[in-house]
Image (tube, rainbow, N blue to C red; front, side):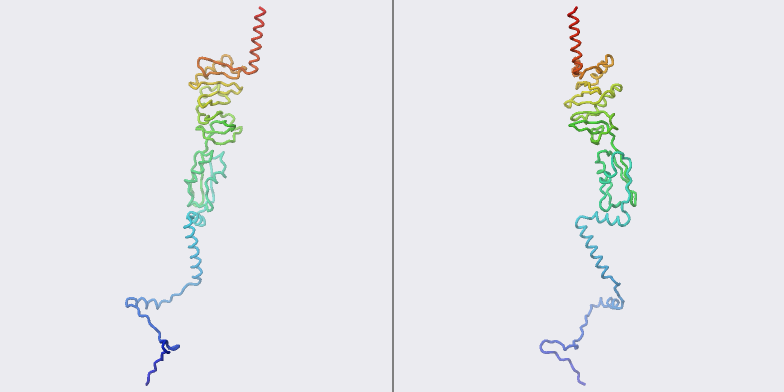
Length: 301
């Protein structure tokens, strides 16, 4: 029997079509057993695994891009909000002058308000910058509620300066430029830096409880001393040193002679050894008429 070997085509060393022998890969000895086990397994890919894997890939790419672009907190907020931890209710209490809209804007909860990522400390600091707000407490009630308790500042006096009239606190902080009839009984201070020294003027008036209701304002002059303006327009000019003693003198004169109810424009008490009255125009005319009458009566005698 003669064996037939396939002939090689020319010098290329190619085998005729369909006659090329198969090549076997010889694995190292230590890999042969695992290879036999894997060859016996029936490994099948689940349906649509390619589509799902592609979607997962694009989602992972999007998240990676957002993280790389500095949007980490936005991603986390959105994810936790969609997971049932979105802020659905904000309970605000304790405020009467501050609007709820102003409070919510100051809290800046963001496009995806999540109770997990909401920064209560930073929000509290922003709310406390509102004019009327003195102190704020913010509590998180999981899963979806914020409680905001506000303590507001109390108006202490009215400050008039540069043509403006505003409400101020005891320490001189401006609260509001809206001064309505509710605050008509508050003491008024006038002048540069009078806001910082309003407590000083109010403390002075407290020593004269029956006289204080007759006062309409305290004017700080050159940042050194006070003029007390009464409701009838009389101005009491107090000294820089020991103004309380000077005011005692003015009140005593009024109690004994009703001097502050007469036709005078001002009482000058700046010098302890001298008391000066400045008359109104009507008071001046009355004084001139009195002097003429006395002179006439004196000439007749």
